[in-house]
Image (tube, rainbow over all chains, first blue to last red; front, side, top):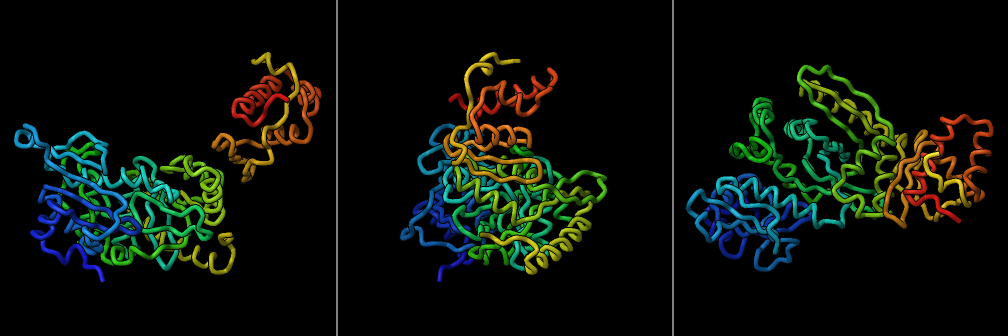
Length: 321
Length: 94
C-alpha cells in the first residue's frame, strides 16, 4: 500500500523534492515535482496530506513540474522562482514567496494542455449520495466559494476547476482530482467564518488574481480520489451582495452552449465531444442560482439534490446510453 | 440583397448526412465533422437547410418556396441567413 504525503516528515519531503522529486497522485494523474523551495514543499505536505505518495524512482509519471530558483542575480536579489513543466516554461518567473500558487497554476496548465483523454469542462464538481453536481465556472460567479462551502457541509470534492469525463465512457462518470480550492480576496474571510474545520494555507497577497489562499480538500475527498461519480445535474451559481435567493430551470440548449463554450478542450474532442456534451445535457437538468447567503443557497441545493436523486432513481431522467 | 453571388447558380447542402444533430426546443446544434465546428441554428435556418437537402435550388426558387409574397426586409433577412450558412460550409454551390 502506498504511503500518504502527510505521513512523511517535511524534512524528508524537502530532501526528496531537491533530488529525485516528490511523486504526487491526484485522482488519475501522477506527477513528479522537483522543487528547491522548502516553504512550497511544506505547503504541499500540508494541503495534500492524504494524497498517495508514489515512489518517485519507480513510477511512470504523467508529467513533471519543476520549481527552481534561477542561477542568476535574481537568486538572491528580489528572489524569484521559475516553473518548468516537462521541458517548457509556460510562465514568467514569480517572486520566490509565491512558489506555491505558481505550482498550482502550473499544475492546472499542464492538465489543460495535456489531459485530452478527458473532455474537460471548466467546472467545479462535488458529489453526494453517488450523484455529481456540476457547477460550470462563469467569471465572478462565486463558484469556488460555493464549492468550498459545499465541501465543508459534507459534500465530496471532485474538483474545483476541472470536470473530467472520458467522452467514450457510456456512463460519462466524473473523475475526481481533489486538489486544494484557491479562494480569492473576500472569499477567504467568508470561508474562514463559514467553518472552523478548515485546513488552509497562508494568504498570498497581490498575485495576478488578487489575494489567494488555498483550502485543502476534505480528508474524505482526498481518500476517495479513486471513486468516480455519476453525472447528476448542472448548477450555474451567481453570487451578488444583497441578491435574493432565486432558483430557476435552464433550457438544454443554453446549457449545451455554456458548457461547450467554457470547456478547456471541447473543440479538440471533435464528434465524441459533441456526443458526450449532448448526452450530459440530456441526462442532467440545469438550474441557475442567484444568491447572497451561503446557508440559504446550500439548503436549496441540498433539497434539489434530493429531488434529483429521486428522479434519477424513478427513471424520470434519461439514463446514459 | 447583400451578396449578388447568391442570385446565380444552384445551391445544395454539404455533407448533410454526416452532420451530428441535437435539437432542443426551437434550436438545433449541428456538429460538422468536416470542419470540426459546432453551429447553432434557429428553426428558420434549419428549415432552410432541410429544404435544400430535399432538393437543390437557386436562391430565388428557395425564396419562392418559403415566402412566395415576401417583402424586402424579410428577403434581406433570409439572404443574410443564407450567407451565414454558406460561410459556415453547411450550404454550397452545386
